[in-house]
Length: 175
Image (cartoon, rainbow, N blue to C red; front, top):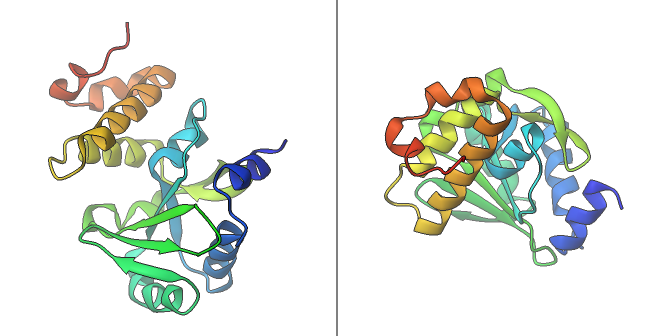
């Protein structure tokens, strides 16, 4: 079974939300990139997740928000816009924290679920995971997953270890 087919089965994506969203972004030439766990999967050994986290370039942000609302169910939260469809369990979150908005400028195409998608640079991805792991507003289980993602990245790319704050490294077991 191909990666995309497997993921569509796991996310019960009968609405083709993933393909529809990516197609819409491409059709309207929206600059974006994948961040979060799926981006980590593009650099390290993949783990299954129902989430797809994206960042829209600041120059495309306002027009894209309106565009998405005409095609999908959209919910606004303090740090994200969540996109959904009734016939899909896929959870798409578009990060709205301004610290992430220049990530698309440095993104490169990588394999994500069998699709060539723009993915945040390795350094940007790690920085985003550091911000997320240190965010006291995030659920504790989400912060634990962020620590796991950091561990996956530094295990595969040991040079990144020096970029991780000591207090986070102490919480990661790589023995």
